Image (cartoon, rainbow, N blue to C red):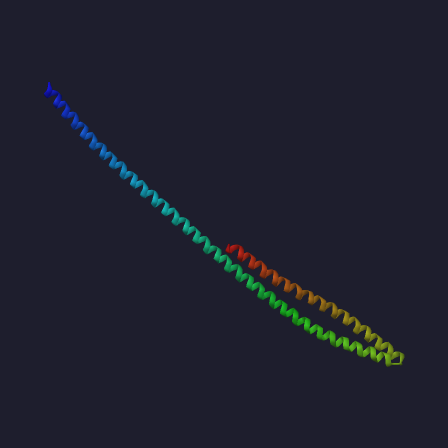
Length: 173
C-alpha cells in the first residue's frame, strides 16, 4: 500500500507540477497580452494625437489663408478708397479755384455797379451780379457736396482699416 500511495503521491505531484507549469505558461500569455494591449493603446493614442495635430495644422493654415485674404481685400479697399478720396480732393481744389474766380468776378461787378449811373448798364450789371451770385451758390453747394464725399471717403478708409485689423486680430486668436 505504501507503494500505491507513493505512486499516487508522485502522480499527484507530477500533476501539480504540470498544472503549475501550465499556470506559469498561462500567466506568461496573460502578461504578453497585457503588454500587447499597452502597446496597442499607446499606438492608438499616438495615431489620434497625430490626427489631431494634423487637423489643427490644417485649421491654422486655413486661418492664415483667411487672414491673408482679408488683409489683401482690406488693402485693396483702402487703396481704392484712397484713390477715390484723392480724386474728390482734386475736384474740390478745382471747384474752390473756380469759386474764388467767380467770387472775385462778383466783387468786380458789384464795385462796377456802385460807380455806374446809366440805368441800362445798371440793369445789365445787376443781371450779371445775380447770375454770378447764383453760380457762386451752385459752386458752393457743389464744393460742400465734394467736401462731404471726401469726409465719407476718409471715414470709409478708417472703417475699412479698423474692421480688417479687428477681423485679422479675431482670426489670429
